[in-house]
Amino acid sequence: MKYRIATRIGSYIAVFGLMVALLPISAQTRDLKLGVVSPGRVLEKIPHTQEARERIEREFSSRTRQIKGEQEELQKLEEKFERDGAIMGSSERDRLERDVVTLKRSLKRDIDELREDRSLRENQELGELQTRIVEVIQAIGKEGKFDLILVDGVIYADKRVDVTDEVISRLTDEFKRSSKDRGSKR
Image (tube, rainbow, N blue to C red; front, side, top):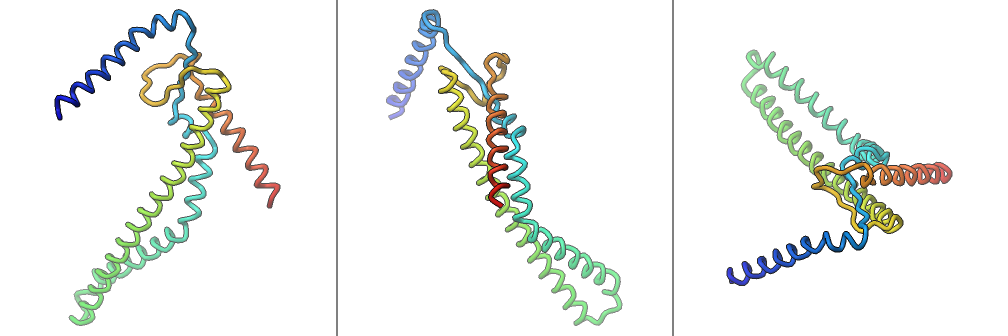
């Protein structure tokens, strides 16, 4: 089994090596049009990203306010316990201590749930943005008759092959058009 995998990997390496060796020959007969995109820079620059952040913030604002209220309540109970615990009766002190522990548990659970729900929502928004970015990159590739557009893992790219700004520009224009459409529908 291991021998077959090693043989198969060796075959892939040999085919890849042959392709790389033949690349200069084919490049001489035909100019390749290459492009490079920095998806991180695209996400950082397009207005879609900020809108998604604001949408998520609005979506979770009431739960965030609720948790802050619980944190303030917990702080008041802890201060009361510290301040008055020594002069309270044992049953009252025990009840207050149970209340503090119960509220801490509830608060921790609420914070964990909020963090998890928010993370899922952010990943959903990010996935949708990434899908749209890929669609725009593919459209630019087809329209510009690129042979290859690379993303991620590029250490250096000359400005002549970097199409990141074009992707940002298209997505920004698209965002502006869709914002106008949403504004006219209200």
